[in-house]
Length: 446
Image 1 (tube, helix red, strand yellow):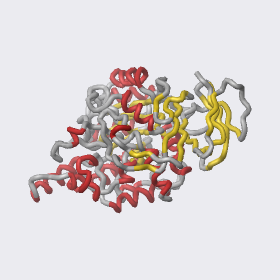
Image 2 (cartoon, rainbow, N blue to C red):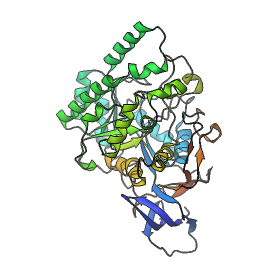
Image 3 (cartoon, one colour):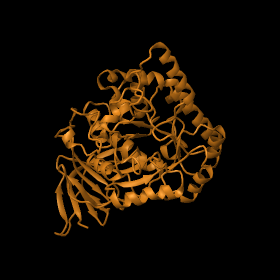
Image 4 (cartoon, rainbow, N blue to C red):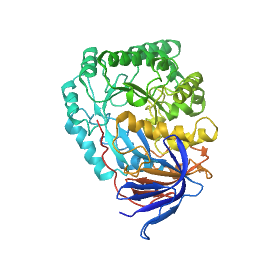
């Protein structure tokens, strides 16, 4: 493997920005110093006027393989991730077949080992009937990112709504439990009430159907179960101001037993955007009224919300352009989360240090990922070089998603991903993929 030295770069790491040289050798960061003298065989990269960040770790994606490869594959979506500075991902179990057995879960790891340019991990899936199988995951603490429970229905029909099943899972699961929290009873009631008012539902009804109360009731239930059993709980894609009352910011992240995630689309869009984008921003949980977005930003910055993710969930253009009730829910986003946050950095809403903390450091700490998420000597060289003096416009011609579209089309970001390293290999450079070396299975220090 070639060795590299990035010279004179602005390194954003551990709440500071400093000028440094960074030496990459044998998959890892060999040395960080103000000046490094190295042999001639090392490839030099001039980092002047550029910023070096640890690669983003996306703790929630849907890459659709196996079974839904007309929408996406691990290969295509991991490629898009790397182009966007996401060097590691954790993928959800609602593929076909659902990852409800240890054998089916391992099948996904086998696919990724042969096709993913990014590092990878996969959640074990839960149903109302597979509790004993889920608990076998307790023996894989160092190999599996966690257990996923859909406490609200979504793509894949994996709703877990049995109180007895939920109680057993929260009581006995030793790994992190990640939850999708929406109350199905409230969703059904809201749907019936809206249909009584008008027969044809539209995308603007989506946040009224999957409303604040549906999210809060389910999140509260999850928090109560986790508190009862001291379960390690991570609630995914928070969307409401009301839910944020369930989380505190007093403890250091590594000491928290209950943590929370926010996704980039809930920080960017509001319910007002349904008028223009319609089903293209239909997702579960729904994008809601603007006051919720403002509350999410406040909670992100005061550490009630711990990490930023995408919930990347691609569907075909045809599936998104069905009538509202048939249109599939989910947005393709994994190619642009870092650029979107850099947009908000340029607007003065968030610092570079906080972006790195929420998209890299905190994810590594939250999941106890081994040797990743920081720019540290001895850590894997998962790195992103960004140019804050260049721009990137989202166009269909430069998307790597298999679905071929983005809700961000036409947006110009005030930054550019120049290079992405995964495990010390330069994978993406100056709008091109320059290596096809596959990523590694994430390991966890538990």
